[in-house]
Length: 51
Image (cartoon, rainbow, N blue to C red; front, side, top):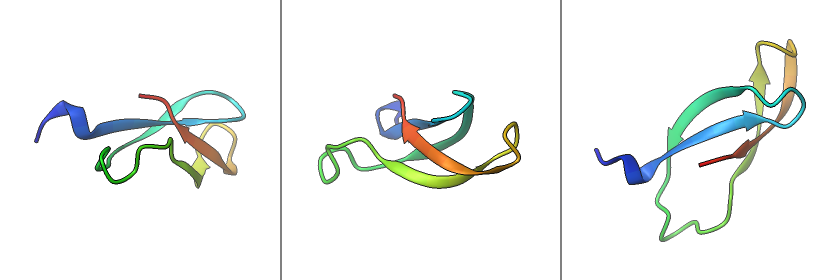
């Protein structure tokens, strides 16, 4: 798999990179925002795409 499809998800509260995922950038050109669990904040927070 190419690195072009890989994205990193960063916590909007503490700004730690917690998740790596992949997406089709042609079908989803906007940045993703998802509710995920942050192990540093110890709660579910918004995670946004950084790369």
